[in-house]
Amino acid sequence: MLMDLAILRNILFWCTLINLGTLLLWWAILLVPHEWLYRYTNRFYRVSSEQFEVINVAGIAFYKVLIILFNLVPYIALWIVG
Image (cartoon, rainbow, N blue to C red; front, side, top):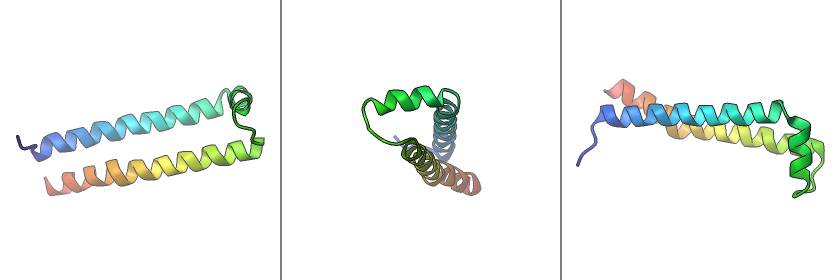
């Protein structure tokens, strides 16, 4: 069974939206209950507050790049082609 461009484009669109929602949720969880999240994480991983911030900001940036590279760019390419 072959997948036509419209189905693939639709899949990539929804993957992009779901991943952006996950990214926004990560950002909101990091922003709102920040001190609670740091204390909870610090029980398992002994990191300073600055290291905690750097790890999360780097993770958010890396995840955003992956969303753009693997979801958004193929979606735009298929939109241009189709």
